[in-house]
Length: 398
Ligand code: PMP
Image (cartoon, rainbow, N blue to C red; front, side):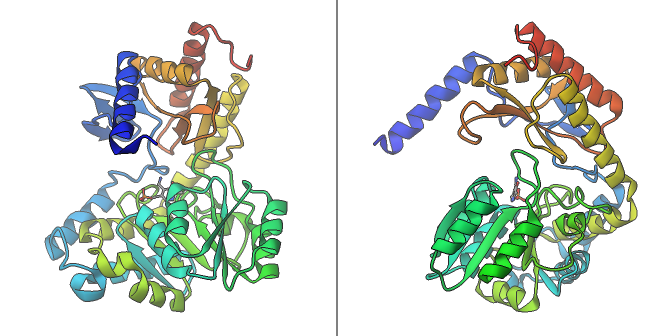
């Protein structure tokens, strides 16, 4: 056992080694955003590390909504939602989300992470079981761990394994939780099959739409639209920090579930309300997303083109079929070195390293957006090919 001091020292040694190799990329200070570009250290870079999938960050209408709400309500609130923290901006946003997600009601929390944590842990209790895809987001895992329910993990998108686990697990209440779009690999959960199993075993279905709102479905409504479904999911959770360029998270569901969360979930009862600026910005974003449909079409064209171009150049993009595109390079040192050289060539992209992903699947994780042009994408893929060749490795040769 290393103990607290030992763990801190181990991290310091790792950071020192990465710094010496010029492979420490995290926590970079961004001085300016400009659509698909960022300014870092006074230099402009093409950004493949943003979650603003349909380019709404900085949208004038959304900025104005935030400023107006600050003028009206101030920069903060009078505290927690259940006491004096609920403003008409919150009520209006929740109504808009419920309408958008076609549910009876909705509730917002101060972050997406907190939303999963508090919702799962307050819905699932002793005697229940929560069935969690093996590669679900950390906030889902933490929510499961925090609840007193049995925590059952099933193999990634493996319906035979989910069935087996449902069959062998005794529980009072059951919930199946999945990411709609998995945040490391960009693949889509097999929702129709999950709903079938849930019906058979009397389970609720909980879906995290962090990376599917604005991305999946003809009009960007998300995973339900993508599969042409109108029912079968009990809890649609999402973030207000990706496609929606604000902060916060939401749950859209039946009124009785929302009532429960508004009276029993600890993040609602014990943590201050989402600031009015972010709340109003989020609401305006849902409106803009509906009106400016070209953004969703452009995003779809872009990720299809991006994945195709990377594959043609010999890169492994895993199972991605969305705007999250992993470029799996394998070895940690070479993944970091490729990142460094891309940065030297004007491209801002981040490596995702084990243990965040399985060993030897170290990767660059690129998020493509509706801002990117075909030329941007070609530039990225050509530069990466050159970098990879300079490192003595032919794409596709490993
Ligand atoms: N769920 C998923 C699938 C995510 O990828 C993230 C953030 N990366 C979250 C939840 C947490 O959202 P937030 O960043 O808004 O806290």
